[in-house]
Image 1: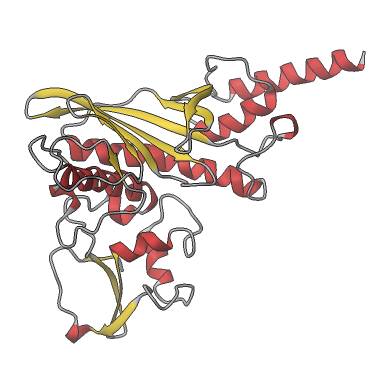
Image 2: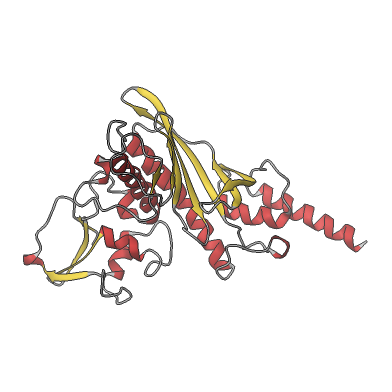
Length: 307
Protein backbone atom coordinates (compact mmCIF):
# COMPACT_ATOMS: atom_id res chain seq x y z
CA UNK A 1 0.00 0.00 0.00
CA UNK A 2 2.83 2.36 0.89
CA UNK A 3 4.60 1.69 -2.42
CA UNK A 4 1.39 2.41 -4.33
CA UNK A 5 0.99 5.74 -2.51
CA UNK A 6 4.62 6.67 -3.21
CA UNK A 7 4.14 5.93 -6.90
CA UNK A 8 0.96 8.02 -7.03
CA UNK A 9 2.74 10.93 -5.35
CA UNK A 10 5.60 10.72 -7.89
CA UNK A 11 3.14 10.77 -10.79
CA UNK A 12 1.27 13.75 -9.33
CA UNK A 13 4.48 15.72 -8.78
CA UNK A 14 5.68 15.02 -12.31
CA UNK A 15 2.31 16.15 -13.66
CA UNK A 16 2.60 19.42 -11.73
CA UNK A 17 6.12 20.05 -13.09
CA UNK A 18 5.05 19.36 -16.66
CA UNK A 19 2.10 21.70 -16.30
CA UNK A 20 4.50 24.44 -15.25
CA UNK A 21 5.92 24.46 -18.77
CA UNK A 22 8.48 21.69 -18.95
CA UNK A 23 8.36 19.96 -22.32
CA UNK A 24 8.64 16.16 -22.21
CA UNK A 25 12.05 15.05 -23.53
CA UNK A 26 12.82 11.91 -25.48
CA UNK A 27 13.26 9.68 -22.43
CA UNK A 28 11.31 8.93 -19.25
CA UNK A 29 12.13 11.19 -16.30
CA UNK A 30 11.45 10.54 -12.66
CA UNK A 31 9.94 13.54 -10.90
CA UNK A 32 13.22 14.65 -9.30
CA UNK A 33 14.95 14.82 -12.68
CA UNK A 34 11.97 16.66 -14.11
CA UNK A 35 12.09 19.32 -11.40
CA UNK A 36 15.83 19.87 -11.87
CA UNK A 37 15.62 20.19 -15.64
CA UNK A 38 12.54 22.37 -15.47
CA UNK A 39 14.58 24.81 -13.41
CA UNK A 40 17.38 24.58 -15.94
CA UNK A 41 15.38 25.14 -19.11
CA UNK A 42 12.53 27.24 -17.79
CA UNK A 43 10.90 28.28 -21.06
CA UNK A 44 10.49 24.80 -22.53
CA UNK A 45 12.56 25.79 -25.60
CA UNK A 46 15.03 22.99 -24.98
CA UNK A 47 15.18 19.24 -25.41
CA UNK A 48 17.04 17.15 -22.82
CA UNK A 49 18.53 13.83 -23.90
CA UNK A 50 20.09 11.54 -21.34
CA UNK A 51 23.78 10.64 -21.83
CA UNK A 52 23.82 11.76 -25.47
CA UNK A 53 26.53 14.36 -24.94
CA UNK A 54 30.29 14.10 -24.45
CA UNK A 55 32.45 16.29 -22.21
CA UNK A 56 35.88 17.56 -23.27
CA UNK A 57 37.54 14.75 -21.27
CA UNK A 58 35.50 12.08 -23.10
CA UNK A 59 33.00 11.37 -20.32
CA UNK A 60 29.35 10.98 -21.27
CA UNK A 61 26.94 13.68 -20.11
CA UNK A 62 23.35 14.81 -20.58
CA UNK A 63 22.75 16.81 -23.75
CA UNK A 64 20.60 19.95 -23.59
CA UNK A 65 19.70 20.87 -27.15
CA UNK A 66 18.34 24.27 -28.15
CA UNK A 67 15.17 24.42 -30.21
CA UNK A 68 13.25 27.32 -31.78
CA UNK A 69 16.51 29.00 -32.79
CA UNK A 70 16.09 32.22 -34.78
CA UNK A 71 18.03 32.89 -38.00
CA UNK A 72 20.59 35.70 -37.74
CA UNK A 73 21.78 38.19 -40.40
CA UNK A 74 25.50 37.32 -40.10
CA UNK A 75 28.05 35.27 -38.17
CA UNK A 76 28.73 37.95 -35.56
CA UNK A 77 25.02 38.16 -34.77
CA UNK A 78 24.90 34.35 -34.58
CA UNK A 79 27.68 34.36 -31.97
CA UNK A 80 25.85 37.00 -29.94
CA UNK A 81 22.63 35.01 -30.17
CA UNK A 82 24.39 31.86 -28.92
CA UNK A 83 25.93 33.82 -26.04
CA UNK A 84 22.52 35.15 -25.05
CA UNK A 85 20.91 31.72 -25.09
CA UNK A 86 23.68 30.06 -23.08
CA UNK A 87 23.67 32.94 -20.60
CA UNK A 88 20.14 31.89 -19.67
CA UNK A 89 21.05 28.21 -19.40
CA UNK A 90 24.29 28.86 -17.52
CA UNK A 91 22.64 31.25 -15.07
CA UNK A 92 19.89 28.79 -14.21
CA UNK A 93 22.33 25.90 -13.91
CA UNK A 94 24.63 27.91 -11.64
CA UNK A 95 21.71 28.76 -9.37
CA UNK A 96 20.82 25.07 -9.10
CA UNK A 97 24.42 24.23 -8.22
CA UNK A 98 24.54 26.97 -5.57
CA UNK A 99 21.24 25.77 -4.08
CA UNK A 100 22.68 22.27 -3.76
CA UNK A 101 25.78 23.43 -1.94
CA UNK A 102 28.03 23.49 -4.99
CA UNK A 103 27.18 19.99 -6.18
CA UNK A 104 27.55 19.45 -9.92
CA UNK A 105 28.32 15.77 -10.20
CA UNK A 106 25.77 14.10 -7.91
CA UNK A 107 25.14 10.38 -7.51
CA UNK A 108 22.02 9.57 -9.55
CA UNK A 109 20.60 7.29 -6.84
CA UNK A 110 20.95 9.98 -4.19
CA UNK A 111 20.27 13.04 -6.31
CA UNK A 112 17.70 15.51 -5.07
CA UNK A 113 15.86 18.19 -7.09
CA UNK A 114 18.48 20.93 -6.75
CA UNK A 115 21.40 18.86 -8.05
CA UNK A 116 22.57 18.57 -11.63
CA UNK A 117 24.88 16.20 -13.38
CA UNK A 118 27.37 17.67 -15.86
CA UNK A 119 25.80 18.48 -19.22
CA UNK A 120 26.61 19.96 -22.60
CA UNK A 121 24.48 22.54 -24.38
CA UNK A 122 24.23 22.37 -28.16
CA UNK A 123 22.90 25.20 -30.28
CA UNK A 124 22.81 25.49 -34.08
CA UNK A 125 22.31 29.06 -35.26
CA UNK A 126 21.45 29.63 -38.94
CA UNK A 127 22.79 32.84 -40.47
CA UNK A 128 23.38 34.58 -43.78
CA UNK A 129 26.88 34.62 -45.26
CA UNK A 130 27.01 37.06 -48.18
CA UNK A 131 23.66 35.87 -49.49
CA UNK A 132 24.21 32.19 -48.78
CA UNK A 133 22.44 30.45 -45.93
CA UNK A 134 24.65 28.51 -43.53
CA UNK A 135 24.87 27.81 -39.80
CA UNK A 136 27.23 27.48 -36.88
CA UNK A 137 26.94 24.75 -34.26
CA UNK A 138 28.37 25.57 -30.84
CA UNK A 139 28.61 23.15 -27.92
CA UNK A 140 29.10 24.55 -24.42
CA UNK A 141 30.11 22.46 -21.42
CA UNK A 142 28.77 22.80 -17.88
CA UNK A 143 30.94 20.64 -15.65
CA UNK A 144 33.38 20.92 -12.77
CA UNK A 145 36.27 21.01 -15.25
CA UNK A 146 36.15 23.75 -17.90
CA UNK A 147 32.77 25.20 -16.81
CA UNK A 148 31.08 27.28 -19.49
CA UNK A 149 33.78 26.51 -22.06
CA UNK A 150 32.95 26.11 -25.74
CA UNK A 151 34.27 22.62 -26.41
CA UNK A 152 33.23 22.30 -30.04
CA UNK A 153 32.20 24.49 -32.97
CA UNK A 154 31.35 23.77 -36.56
CA UNK A 155 30.49 25.65 -39.73
CA UNK A 156 29.70 23.13 -42.52
CA UNK A 157 32.20 24.46 -45.05
CA UNK A 158 34.99 24.54 -42.43
CA UNK A 159 34.31 21.24 -40.68
CA UNK A 160 34.25 20.53 -36.96
CA UNK A 161 36.87 21.81 -34.51
CA UNK A 162 37.30 21.00 -30.83
CA UNK A 163 39.01 22.38 -27.77
CA UNK A 164 42.31 20.54 -27.55
CA UNK A 165 45.87 21.48 -26.62
CA UNK A 166 47.51 19.50 -29.43
CA UNK A 167 50.34 21.51 -30.93
CA UNK A 168 49.65 23.07 -34.33
CA UNK A 169 52.49 22.97 -36.85
CA UNK A 170 53.45 26.53 -37.79
CA UNK A 171 53.80 25.53 -41.45
CA UNK A 172 50.47 23.71 -41.94
CA UNK A 173 47.86 25.44 -44.09
CA UNK A 174 44.07 24.97 -44.01
CA UNK A 175 41.13 25.01 -41.64
CA UNK A 176 42.11 24.33 -38.03
CA UNK A 177 40.85 21.19 -36.29
CA UNK A 178 41.44 22.47 -32.77
CA UNK A 179 41.93 25.52 -30.56
CA UNK A 180 43.56 25.77 -27.15
CA UNK A 181 41.97 25.87 -23.69
CA UNK A 182 43.66 29.20 -23.01
CA UNK A 183 42.76 32.24 -25.09
CA UNK A 184 45.22 33.37 -27.75
CA UNK A 185 46.85 36.80 -27.40
CA UNK A 186 45.53 38.89 -30.29
CA UNK A 187 46.37 42.34 -28.96
CA UNK A 188 44.46 45.32 -30.35
CA UNK A 189 42.61 43.42 -33.09
CA UNK A 190 38.84 43.49 -32.45
CA UNK A 191 37.60 39.93 -32.13
CA UNK A 192 34.80 40.69 -34.59
CA UNK A 193 37.40 41.20 -37.34
CA UNK A 194 38.80 37.67 -37.04
CA UNK A 195 35.88 35.23 -36.95
CA UNK A 196 36.05 33.75 -40.46
CA UNK A 197 38.61 31.06 -41.28
CA UNK A 198 40.54 31.15 -44.55
CA UNK A 199 41.50 27.74 -45.94
CA UNK A 200 44.56 29.30 -47.54
CA UNK A 201 45.86 30.64 -44.21
CA UNK A 202 48.11 28.93 -41.69
CA UNK A 203 46.26 26.59 -39.35
CA UNK A 204 47.76 28.44 -36.39
CA UNK A 205 46.11 31.65 -37.59
CA UNK A 206 42.81 29.85 -38.17
CA UNK A 207 43.03 28.42 -34.66
CA UNK A 208 43.21 31.99 -33.34
CA UNK A 209 40.08 32.74 -35.35
CA UNK A 210 38.28 29.81 -33.71
CA UNK A 211 39.45 31.19 -30.38
CA UNK A 212 38.08 34.65 -31.22
CA UNK A 213 34.66 33.05 -31.68
CA UNK A 214 34.94 31.45 -28.24
CA UNK A 215 35.82 34.83 -26.76
CA UNK A 216 32.68 36.35 -28.26
CA UNK A 217 30.21 33.52 -27.65
CA UNK A 218 31.83 32.26 -24.42
CA UNK A 219 32.86 35.44 -22.60
CA UNK A 220 29.74 37.04 -24.07
CA UNK A 221 27.61 34.62 -22.05
CA UNK A 222 29.54 35.55 -18.92
CA UNK A 223 29.95 39.33 -19.27
CA UNK A 224 27.33 41.71 -20.68
CA UNK A 225 30.10 44.16 -21.58
CA UNK A 226 31.31 41.60 -24.15
CA UNK A 227 27.89 40.64 -25.47
CA UNK A 228 26.85 44.27 -25.96
CA UNK A 229 30.12 45.47 -27.53
CA UNK A 230 31.06 42.64 -29.87
CA UNK A 231 32.00 44.86 -32.79
CA UNK A 232 34.79 46.72 -30.95
CA UNK A 233 36.01 44.64 -28.01
CA UNK A 234 39.57 43.29 -28.12
CA UNK A 235 42.10 41.73 -25.75
CA UNK A 236 43.50 45.17 -24.93
CA UNK A 237 40.13 46.86 -24.45
CA UNK A 238 40.13 48.74 -21.16
CA UNK A 239 36.85 48.47 -19.28
CA UNK A 240 36.73 51.51 -17.06
CA UNK A 241 34.80 53.83 -14.79
CA UNK A 242 35.46 57.37 -13.61
CA UNK A 243 35.16 58.28 -9.94
CA UNK A 244 36.26 61.48 -8.16
CA UNK A 245 38.67 62.49 -10.91
CA UNK A 246 40.25 59.04 -11.13
CA UNK A 247 39.90 56.29 -13.72
CA UNK A 248 39.59 52.66 -12.62
CA UNK A 249 40.05 50.06 -15.33
CA UNK A 250 40.83 46.45 -16.15
CA UNK A 251 41.99 45.00 -19.45
CA UNK A 252 39.59 42.55 -21.08
CA UNK A 253 42.42 40.01 -21.33
CA UNK A 254 42.64 40.17 -17.52
CA UNK A 255 38.93 40.37 -16.76
CA UNK A 256 38.20 36.84 -18.01
CA UNK A 257 40.91 35.48 -15.67
CA UNK A 258 38.83 36.59 -12.68
CA UNK A 259 35.53 35.07 -13.76
CA UNK A 260 35.70 32.49 -10.95
CA UNK A 261 37.72 34.32 -8.30
CA UNK A 262 35.91 37.67 -8.34
CA UNK A 263 32.60 36.94 -10.06
CA UNK A 264 31.95 33.43 -8.68
CA UNK A 265 31.59 31.77 -12.10
CA UNK A 266 28.30 33.50 -12.85
CA UNK A 267 26.73 34.35 -16.21
CA UNK A 268 25.18 37.60 -17.40
CA UNK A 269 27.48 39.70 -15.22
CA UNK A 270 26.36 43.32 -15.55
CA UNK A 271 28.48 46.42 -16.10
CA UNK A 272 27.39 47.65 -12.68
CA UNK A 273 28.74 44.50 -11.04
CA UNK A 274 32.10 44.97 -12.76
CA UNK A 275 32.18 48.65 -11.77
CA UNK A 276 31.51 47.73 -8.15
CA UNK A 277 34.35 45.20 -8.14
CA UNK A 278 36.83 47.74 -9.53
CA UNK A 279 36.73 49.39 -6.07
CA UNK A 280 37.30 46.19 -4.13
CA UNK A 281 40.38 44.20 -3.13
CA UNK A 282 39.34 40.71 -4.19
CA UNK A 283 41.72 40.85 -7.15
CA UNK A 284 45.35 39.82 -6.79
CA UNK A 285 48.11 42.29 -7.61
CA UNK A 286 49.30 40.68 -10.83
CA UNK A 287 46.34 41.48 -13.09
CA UNK A 288 44.02 43.49 -10.86
CA UNK A 289 42.38 46.85 -11.62
CA UNK A 290 44.50 49.85 -12.54
CA UNK A 291 43.98 53.34 -11.18
CA UNK A 292 45.12 56.71 -12.44
CA UNK A 293 44.21 60.37 -12.85
CA UNK A 294 41.72 61.01 -15.65
CA UNK A 295 43.95 63.58 -17.34
CA UNK A 296 46.65 60.94 -17.81
CA UNK A 297 44.30 58.35 -19.32
CA UNK A 298 44.82 58.05 -23.08
CA UNK A 299 41.45 56.90 -24.45
CA UNK A 300 41.25 54.42 -27.34
CA UNK A 301 38.26 53.63 -29.57
CA UNK A 302 38.07 50.11 -28.12
CA UNK A 303 37.89 51.30 -24.49
CA UNK A 304 34.47 50.84 -22.91
CA UNK A 305 33.09 53.02 -20.12
CA UNK A 306 30.78 51.10 -17.77
CA UNK A 307 29.97 53.79 -15.19
